[in-house]
Image (cartoon, rainbow, N blue to C red; front, side, top):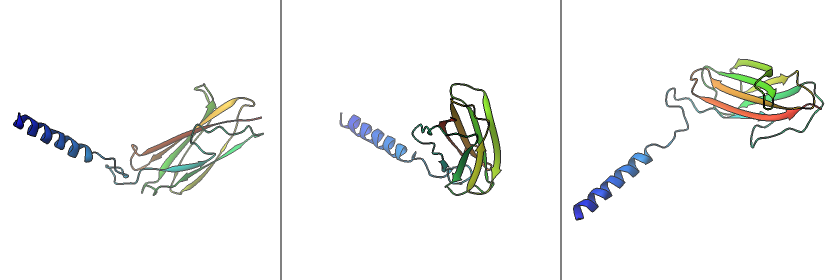
Length: 138
């Protein structure tokens, strides 16, 4: 009985030690680069919905707040009608700078649209950030 209790205690202790070693690191293990963090204007947090605006163009600022990967990043911006897979605006650009500006055009009037933003490290494609927000043109 005492041996079983000791064996159980050792097994639990080993599991706890193994679990403690599995903590996520703030950097990407393959390249050592910092995980991407991004801020946008309009914001992409909490299912943000922008108030309707007259348009016809809508500015978007994408700011890389983490350390820039050595090879820079690729920023993909896609706008589509909410609930549709058909896009009316697509732009991709590679960048080595923190601040990046886009102008979304061709927005249909009086319908809700979704902007999806993806930022990917050019050095390591598994280092990725995504965000989205909704807006509409009056």
